[in-house]
Image (tube, rainbow, N blue to C red; front, side, top):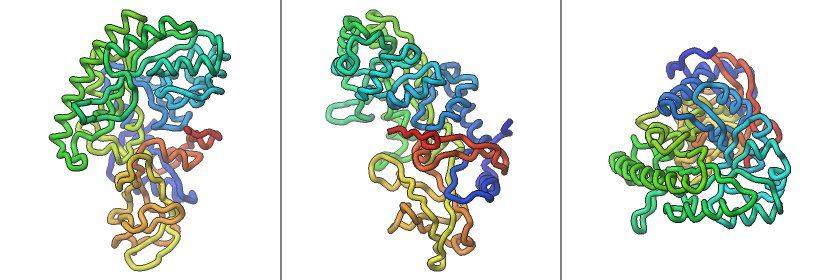
Amino acid sequence: MAGPWSPDGHWARLDRAVAHLDGPVAALSLEAFAHNAAALVRLADGVPLRLATKSIRSRDVVHAVLGTLGWRGVLAATLPEALWLAETVDDVLVGYPSTHRAALRALAADDAARARVTLMVDDVAHLDLVDAAAPRHPELRVVIELDAALVRGPIRYGVRRSPVRSVASAVALADAIARRPGFRLVGLMAYESQVAGVPDGVRRGSAPALAVRAMQRLSMRDVAERRAAAVAAVGRVAELELVNGGGTGSVDRTARDPSVTEVAAGSGLYGPHLFDGYRALEPAPALAFSAPVGRRPSPGCATLLGGGWTASGPARRDCLPVVVWPEGLRLDAEEGAGEVQTPVLGAAADGLRLGDRVWLRHAKAGEPCERIDRLHVVAGDAVVGTANTYRGEGRMLL
């Protein structure tokens, strides 16, 4: 069993644990991971958490999380991923509509998968696509996504997801599903990204933290009102088994919404650096990677092998990994994080020898798993096991 996590000596412990391994190496601290999982469950305060697998990308880790109290089912990103996960997980909600015709046919032909997998729709055209891919298919479980962005005139806060914003449009789609043979409406989803994915304790671009918090308070009132009204109205069309909302950064606030039956979370388990700065949650850096020093080109500079594990999203500096250990190092602004080499600058570089490891934190949670085939699980200062990533099982998210 993992002991309590402490930030004191965390990076030195990870470094000692993987000293015998050639890099780059990704390490998962068992203590930090358990600390984060328990913190998310406490924030949910009895509301079940659904694990967002795009933030994890390891079936071994998914199974470990689902084996603990407070977690129920997974939120997959794609239907092919969902079908694969459904081989070992009995409750898989697909978080995005699928246009993958072969996967739709496979779902329609598999009795066990149809009982375990729920599709996401936000348009009658999604029903048409399913019917075209798998004509005369058996009944498929579907959930409607309600757009949760805050829109005020020309200003929008939140990601661009579903076209279903109003209660009327949700009911219209629910009615269409109810009339359509081969579909059963079982739930509603609304993802308030402008709260779940935006830290409320730090400046956001030009907006100070107080302005971010004001926007989020308004957003939570808006989505709670629209979600509750939609749940009540759609519930008169079909019996709803689930109402999913939120994400790591909004677990506590979304869980307080009485219309929600479950909250999605995932990134907070690994604790990437984009999730620093939340007031309610301070995730420990459970997952990090190290790259070995391969060159010493000049005083105050060491060059790492690899390191260019840049996150998706707008091409901003905060999508780059950050150097965390040894302290006193930074990326070279001219080169950044490179495909094959990454220079790091600072006085601490003069103390590094060839083969020493420098530790970096990735910006987003699951994306490092596209680069490596296994996570080295560390307890204390020893590797106690490995967890295969999707890549290590011959899979990829997209």
